Length: 116
Length: 116
Image (cartoon, rainbow over all chains, first blue to last red):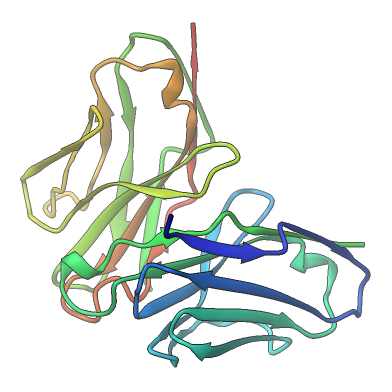
């Protein structure tokens, strides 16, 4: 079954540590995204990539850095995590850029990060 | 910047009653593209409805919504709530013309709980 996969499901760490989250999509899509869903369930775009090229980079702290090895993978690294980074990080993908038929985004299950 | 405002917080309904979740938006886009995503517990968010056509009703899985550009609204409705409709609902905005779907701006989410 094709889908958007994320690892790990959960991660607990301490302030100051570095963490990395992985995302892979098997849908053959060109565009991938990282979203942050906070404790109040607010969902905000962080980054989006199209064919390995960064196209959206919202105002996020510099300790967050996306990494894309190919269009099927988009990882997220957080250097020196802070307590406010505790959230669910959702990865998504879509067909690509263009008209309305390209716009539907397919989400992964999320990675829940807890920073102690 | 762009913004999406939804019915706030928690909506609790009795099974069989009609559902209406409000969504209004503000944008500079001349051709806004509106979405409703549904996030069931322990699942990934998924697309429920989408529309970029003014005054045209769109339907899926018993839900419907009509984009009204004159009032910047895209309210989600269902004639009769079911227990299985209990979930978190997000309204989201993008631009049809400018790399449609490259960036989704989400509303704050509305948690719908349907009781017997």
